[in-house]
Each structure stands twice: as C-alpha cells, then as structure tokens.
Amino acid sequence: MRSPGANAELALLLEVAGTPKPGNVDRHRDFPDLRFEHFLAGAVGARPGLDDAESGAPVGEAFERAVVGMSEQSGGNTQFGCLLLLVPLVRAASERALTPEALTHVVEHTTVADAAGFYRAFDHVDVSVPDLPEDADALDVRRGGDAVPELEARDLTLYDIMAESAPEDGNAVEWTTGFRRTFAAADRIEAGTGSILDRVTDAFLFLLADEPDSLVAGQHGREVAREVSDRASELLDAPDADIAAFADDLVARDINPGTTADVTSAALFVALERGVSV
Image 1 (cartoon, rainbow, N blue to C red):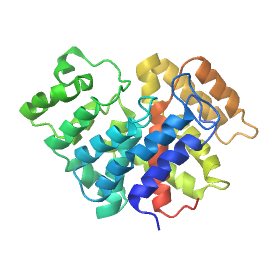
Image 2 (cartoon, rainbow, N blue to C red):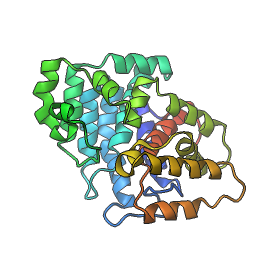
Image 3 (cartoon, rainbow, N blue to C red):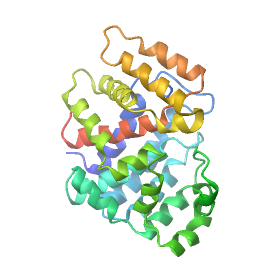
C-alpha cells in the first residue's frame, strides 16, 4: 500500500499526464518555456516535503521544502498551488482522517511560523499572483520572506492568510471551506469509469464547469473566466465533445486555468487514498 506521501507524488504525476486539460500543459502539449518533463521533475522534487508532511512536520515547513524541491528543474513554477493543497491533505491523511472535518482541524491549527514558511516559499520560485490592494502591500506575497516581520507583528497564521485571500483565490477557498471542491471532484473520479487519465480530464472539466478559475480571473478578468467556465459546462458530459478544440483555443488566447489543475491534483490524491486503482 502506498503511503500518503507517495500518493501525493503520484497525484501530481497523474494530473499532468491527463489530456486534454484545456489551457494547461499535459502529456500532449507543452508551452514554449514550460514542458511536460518539468512537471514530472517538479513532482519528484516535491516528494521530500510531502514526506515531511506525512511525518508530522509543520505545514509551512513541509510546504516550503516541497516548493524548494519542486523548483529544482529549469521550467520554473510547476506545482506551487497543487502543493498548497496537497500538504495539508497529506497531513490529515497521516494523522487523523481524510475528511472535511479533519482538513479543517489541520488548517485552522496552523501557526505564524507556518505563514512564514508559506511566504518564504515565494523566494524560491516565480509565482503568478494578481495585484493586491494598496493597503495589503506589507503582506504582498511577492515580498516573500521580507514580509515575515509583518506577519509576526500582526500575529497572522497561515489560515488567517488564506482566509484573507479566499475571496480572490480558489486554493484559499478550499482551505476555508473544508476542501469542498476537492472532495466533490474526488467523488467523481471514484465513481468514474475508464482509465485514471481519462478521469483526470473529466475531473478537470467538471471543476472548470463548476466554478470560474481564479487564476484566469486574476489574469484576464472575471468575464473571461466566466466565459471559459460556461464553455466547459457545455462540453461536460456532452456526447462527442471536442475538448481538444477547446484546449487549442485557450492556449491560443494564453488562458491557463491553473487553479483548476491544482484542485484536480488534490482530488486525485483523495481518490488514491480511498483506493482508486492505477
């Protein structure tokens, strides 16, 4: 039986191997400077941090170590958002139970030191984030470790940071809602048929149809994010749906539903922990 750390690594590998995943790198589609093999290397590199989470290391410490390992490839950021979801999932799976209630316990008990680890992780890789309001400049994640004194002065935990970010960030919403979408997509993967990679594509489209992607909204505006979500809704479960054409269109428009990919990897982890076979 695989350990939670191993299942988290496998979830990262399976997520990028699913195809087509509109607007994202997959095994049939590379971007000019970000390729399939970068994601494979990122998943393997993240494993020590995931194992730390399984062993009971603080969430922020495990997350930072996972990001450092992920970044040891030439493509840059491959799975930062995935790891933000996977680390508390691994922690919950290893010490309590993989339920919304257990996840809520894990994230609500994060500390200021965990928040510091999260901020320091931005020092290791370039992460695309939307602009923040002027009154949040002192805690702008783009400051990385330089923001830690402000975190400590305000006594802000990592859960506090996620709660403040939730209105604009889909991964933060998962942290503050018991990983609602993660578990819903895991249910769909578990109930699905066909290969696990076919179910990855289905879960991705399901999540994109369910809710506009927050990364797309941050980069292109809410109207575009809604348009992309509506198109996914039209294709989901439609016979003979041309998902590949949808993927081509998003790539041509430089639209990347990255948050949807993050939640897909988290859902894969939950499904694997439940015993979905590969």
